[in-house]
Image (cartoon, rainbow, N blue to C red; front, top):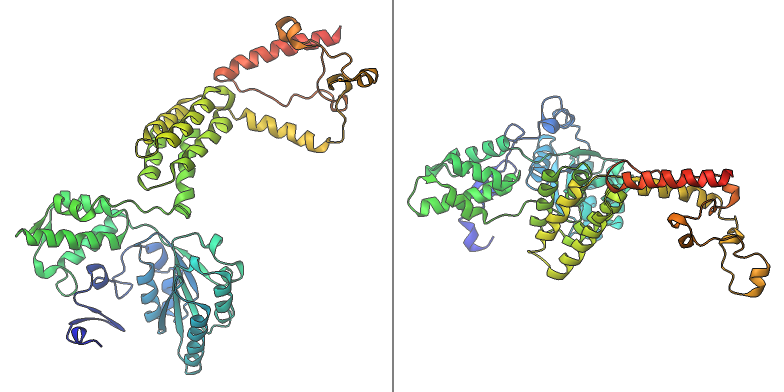
Length: 450
């Protein structure tokens, strides 16, 4: 141990110790399930995990949840309560050789009657080769695997390994969970800030709970900074200004390659489709302020304009396309103006999904009847020979007809009989289109009957 660390006071955490000058979040790490805050569904009485550790039969699990919800802490507690050696490796820096070494040491412990819990942080970053190395040893019980991930394991963990573990979904901590964590840190004189004798006023507490965004580690980190600011100013009370300075406009958790990315855009699109402008603006702001690619958001709005607004308001596609051009041209941060305008327009527009449904019906017939020839009267006849063969014979130019509609003219192959793929909706422009289509079809049917 280096000389400057030899005399550092240590805080005892059972099988591990933490330096007294470690960050508050590390010092306040829960040591038992009784100290663990939140996740009652996962570790409460009669839960699978609690029952398993009480019986010393901990299964391999993957803890899936957002940052700061307690994944690493819970893994340590489970291993200790199960009476197992805890070995932590990182999916980012650990190679196959290190994995084999960990497994070999675990096998030696097993022969001595000891169990090993291998904790893999960010297990979603493990490649297939790494997962294949540990798979047989999870299966035969040489190691008990506890993985931690912020991403959906069904997408990132290979099926054979996923089938041999239990996935436990951990939730974002709620305000009361965070309040408990903060109050405990303020009062704990051994590991927390209790020796400072500080309190936090209600407004500062609310600001801290809001700014932490459900992340216990972020709450403690900000609390420690705010406490130092208050103490440095000679105050006994942490004020809102201290908290704001500590948070420094912390961005909400958002991973553009993970579930938050897909879940949030899904909420945004469903809000637009459901004609809720307020929810649409909220989810749009969540994405923009979290650093989402603005052109990704706009692309989805262009799709929605055609898919969900469609011919109920054909101008919606024009507005969405113009939004794409505007955002591409002016960039961010000002790009939020056209994006918000477009979102509001789409949310307020009448809705119709007739475009997609109509195309789907036509596509089904098109795939089934692709062998049918194009009717002769619809074919061009650029040469005399083609005209002699009947190409173009009987075709009538619609613009030369009343209402620019060639009554009685047939455009589908005769083998298909009568087909009406397009069924307009009843809102906006499409209501007018419906009336016109009915009138044209009626005159068409009358002409055909003569």
